[in-house]
Image (cartoon, rainbow, N blue to C red; front, side):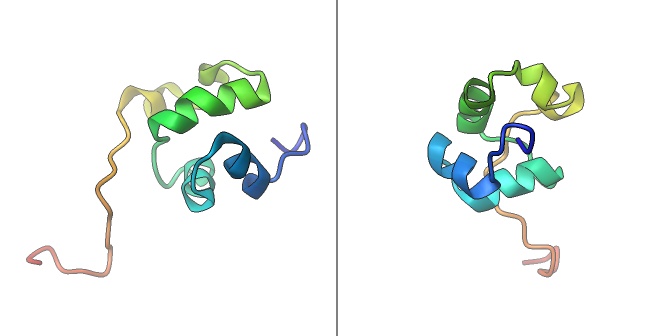
Length: 74
């Protein structure tokens, strides 16, 4: 994205996803939602497997929110 001069904020707006999600995907914190998998490669002109590793693509996106500070009993 840097090579093409895309900021995360601008890319997120352009592909119509939440900036925080795209930022977390690029940091490896979460897996990309289907919209990112479909739209980011088109935006950057790169195949999906050049943007993400096979491990990331092997498992589907899980929209369940994670709260690390909550106890497991909640």
